[in-house]
Length: 117
Length: 114
View 1 (cartoon, each protein chain N blue to C red):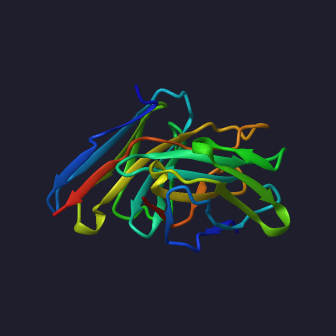
View 2: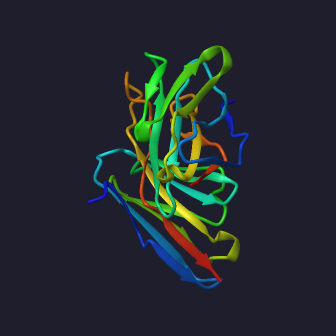
View 3: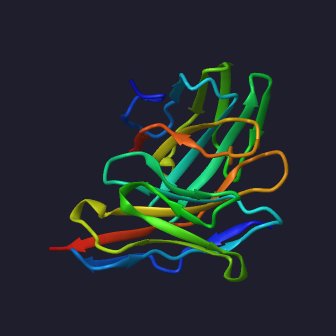
């Protein structure tokens, strides 16, 4: 089983609909992230969370919200989806401590492809 | 501020040829440098990372990279490319401070000719 699991893997929806992408992890990491990938733009950070009570906006948070339901679960919501939110979304986790040998590497899920018509 | 720039959007190499991927890094006192690989339809997998210690790093898929502080470079190399290396490659730098977020480049897409 994957350490970082995203659902759904693919979703097609219509403009104005509410969409939730879910992420769960079994790595025991405190930090979780949502990134968006668009062709030619790389990965851009939407939101990140260092623990259940800590939520932070990333580079492109407008139009998105998140919920950290538990240490292992981090959901991304689009309250009213629009076509330019069509993208590949990745959840990631990392270990919080920058100890010797731990570089803050991100561990990614397999992605959720969202199409907004 | 930390930043990364990948100068090559798309590279095509012949199978069996050598390969070097490039990234221009800007980092603070301590570099946290990463390369990730994304095969078609897949998530991102760590290819290489450098934090400290030995500057020559061995990664997955037969890649290695040498951290050169004077050049701010950490470029993966592979002496003989295989068709399965066709993928998109992303460099990333760890942000300073306690956040630990990564800043990603825009990616280099590698195509492999038979």
